[in-house]
Every structure is written in structure tokens, then in C-alpha cells.
Image 1 (cartoon, rainbow, N blue to C red):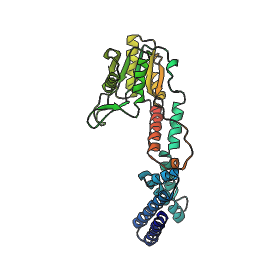
Image 2 (image 1 turned 30 degrees about the horizontal axis):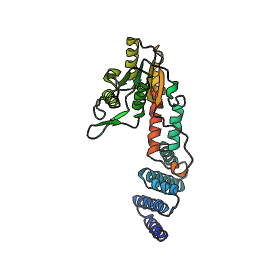
Image 3 (image 1 turned 90 degrees about the horizontal axis):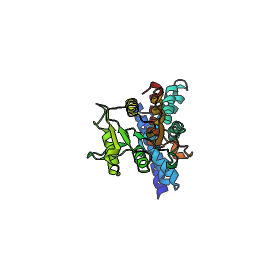
Image 4 (image 1 turned 45 degrees about the horizontal axis):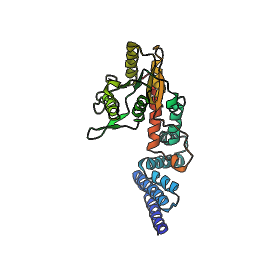
Amino acid sequence: MLVLLGLVLLMVAAFALVERWRQPTWHRWAALGGGLFVVASLAGLLASDLALQKTAGLLVMPAGLVWQLLFARASWQTKRRGLRAAAMDWVMFSAFSLAGSPHLGAAWLHALEASYPPVLMEDVSPLRAIFVLGGGTKLTPEGQIELSDAGDRVVLGARLLHEGKTSYLISSGRSIEGHGQSRNMAAETAELWKQLGIEDRRIVEISNPRNTREEVREYIEVIKAQGFDRVGIVSSAWHLPRVLRHFEGSGVEVTPLPADHRGTILPFVSALFVPQSMGFQSTQHAAWETVGMLVGR
């Protein structure tokens, strides 16, 4: 039954493509897009292998469809006008492929994280205080505080205090005015720590900084004013290179405590060659950190 349905769909797509190809340009691309959608759907229907079904599913997602259309346009332009004339189309296709590539994003993050392996409690010496950068919390539509996708940093800080590795946790950060909802991320982190059983007297909030550079400036002032001799810095492993660069030349030494590891070397399976949200997100994170280090933010 599925085979029969697939053949019917394929014939309909082919007929529509042939009929519309001599029509105005937008008709051609509409027919081509519909044909690609049907072919990808057919692959998903007929594939008994779950990996192939996942690949087919990604191909009919928005990013997958745009990717196929970019390839089709570049191929058509090459056939019609030659490779040199189609160069920009191939550049656009390649850029989209790289930006959405899970392989590129994961490998880039892995390179940023390479010097910061996961924390082992037995290897952490006692610290006077631990500073936890903001970004590990978010608000629900109802205004409730919960962990964000970088919430490991909040949990790691709490674990280190419960394990007796420090006496104080210092939270920081607030949102930038005009950039979304107004939030005090230092207070959000502190509230979650209290819910995890940490006493108020163990928590210090620094609510003024709006970005990483401002957070580190405040940290340096607090460390020097309090005379802290051993302090730790908790952030996502991929973010730590940028954080530590801001400490250079300050005369302050800190112990990096990485959380939220995301970089890895992914297997070469078909689904991971299709541009997708995971790839765009990891590539964006890595590019943001790299540009931030270059411009000193």
C-alpha cells in the first residue's frame, strides 16, 4: 500500500514539474519545491530504517527544504549560465550548509572547550568564593524562574558549595535595556540556589553587569576589595576562554570551573549532513564566542 501511494505521489510530482517548467519563473520554483517535498516525504514513508526516516524528516523541515532549494537553484543556474555565473548561488548554498552543520558547530565548540574538561570534585581545592556568570536561568511565560540550557553552571556552583569546596557563591548579571524582557539574572540565580538548600548568608548578588566584560570587571573589584586569595569562576566551558581573557593583566588569578560542555566529534550519519536547528545553534554559539574574543567583549 505504501509503495503504491509513493509511486502515485511521485508521478503527480513529476507531472506537475514537467507541466510547470515552461511557465513563469515562480511557477518553476514552486513546482520544484513541491517535487522535492514529495520525494523527501516518499523516502520517509518507504524507509524501514529509522535513521533514514529521520533524515527524510529533516529534509522536509524548513531548513531542509531551503537547503534543497538552494542546491536546486545553484544547479539550474550552473546548467543555464555556467559555473562562473552561478558562483554566488553556490556560495549561498555552501554558507547555509556550514551554518546549519551539526558537525561544524560541535567541532568548533569542542575546540573552544578543549582546555576545560568536566570538573571532578576530588580535584577541586577549597576556594574562598566562587563566581557564577549569569545566563543559566530563564523565565517561564508565567514569570517562574527555571534553568536555561546553560543551567549546568547554576547547578555546578551549588554542588561545589554543598561539597565544601567554598563558603560563598556570587551570582551576577542583568539583561540589557531594550533587549527583551528586563531581568535581574543575579537574583534569579540566587533564588534557585535557595531552592537547592543554600543559605542566604552564603550568597552574594552582583546585579549591575550587563555583559561578560562588565561581569569580570566587577569580579576583579570584589576580589581585590575583599582580599580573596583563591577564587573560582563557573561558566559554560565554551565561554570560559573569553571570560579568562578579560582577567589577563589584572593581577588576579582564578580557577576555571567549566560546566555545560557541548562540543564533541559527531558520527558521520546521513541525518547530520542536513542543516538543522542543532547545527545552527552550536555554530552560532561558537561564532559568537570567537568574535567576542576578537573584539574584546
